[in-house]
Image (cartoon, rainbow, N blue to C red; front, side, top):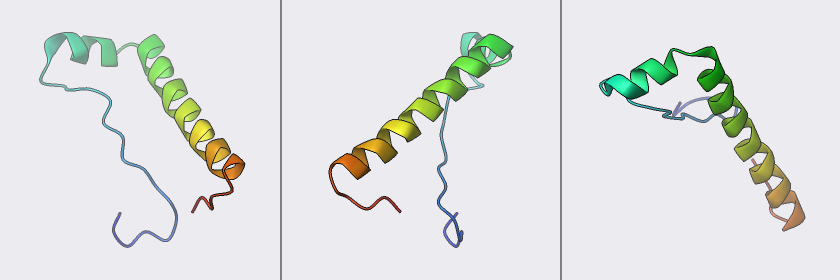
Length: 57
């Protein structure tokens, strides 16, 4: 990611070494919940940056 030509994010969503988290991470419903949460965070970041007059790269 150091030399990437586009913006990116690395998101840690759980620990596979934790048995209960690993089981949740294997379910489609939980994966969708996590994906939607990441999506919402990105949208809020972008919208907040525009509203405050900040440039979002």
